[in-house]
Image 1 (cartoon, rainbow, N blue to C red):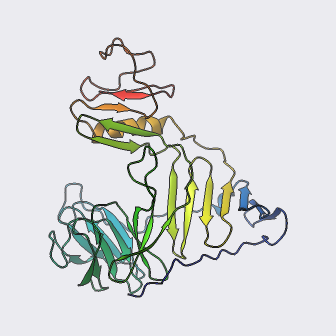
Image 2: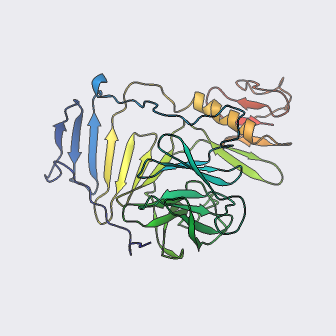
Image 3: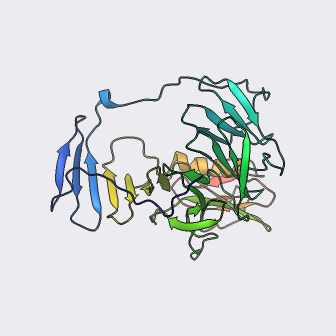
Length: 351
C-alpha cells in the first residue's frame, strides 16, 4: 500500500469569496447564504426555512434482521463498513468474526475467528475499506492492523503500538493513507488523556506525523460514577457536544453541537466556519437528554457503593434516606441503585 508522505492540503472552492466584504446569495431552495472573508476566518452563514419539496428522507431498501433470539447469523454488530461494490463488512464481537454481505444482504463469507494467530481477531478498534475494496482492521488487543483482500482472504498484518484502544479508530482517505485515532497532545489539567487526533501510519505500521482536530470549547454535560477502586463517566446523548471527522479529501471537520456550526480546518488556508441559523424545533439542550444520561449510568454502571455526580455540582446535604432529601430531588428508583435528579437543572446524585 502506498501512503502519501504528508497530510494532503485541502482545497475548498467557495463561491463569492473573492471580494473584500460580505456577499450574499440565494440558492434554488430559497436559503440565503452570506460569505465574509475579510477576517482571519472565512464565514458562511445560512438562514431561511428549507422548503418541504427540498427535504430528503431516508428510505429502508433492505434489512438483514434475524429474529431477536436468533444468533445463528450474528450475535451483535460492533462496526459496519460499505465498500465500493456496495458490499457490507460487519464485525461481530461475539465470535470475533467479520461477516461479508452482498449488496442484497446475502452472507458471502465469515472471516477469521477469536485468537492471536494470522487472520484471527481479539478486538475491533476500527475498520477501513481500502481502495481495492479490501479491508483493514485495527486489532488493538493483538496490537496490529490486519489486511484482508476483496475476496475476504487474509493477506498480511502490521504491528502497532499497544496500550490504547478506542472504537471506529482506523480511518483512510482518497489518497490511500491510513490513520489511527489517538491522543496527540499532552493532557491538560483535569484530563486523563490529551486531545484526540489522527496519527498517520507509515507502510509497515510505524507512526508518522500527527494532527489534532480544531480545539472547540464546548461545555460537556457528563456523569461520573465512582467507587473506591474505579471511576467511569458518560455523557448525555442530547446535550451540546464537540464532534470532529476526517474528510476523505484530507482535512478536519469539527462541529459545536450547541452553536449550529461546522468548522473546516484547511491546511495553509483560512479556517471556514459554516453557520446555520437555528430554526424552530425541539430544544434538546437539557430535559430528556439530561434524564437519559442518568438512566444510562444507572443501567450500565450500577455497582455497590457507587456515587454519581455531575462535575462541578455539590452533593445534597442531609441524610440519604429519601425522606430528607433536598427539595427538587425526586426519587427515580429504589434505594439500591437509585438515581436522583434535580428537575431544575442542578446536580445529580445517586447511591
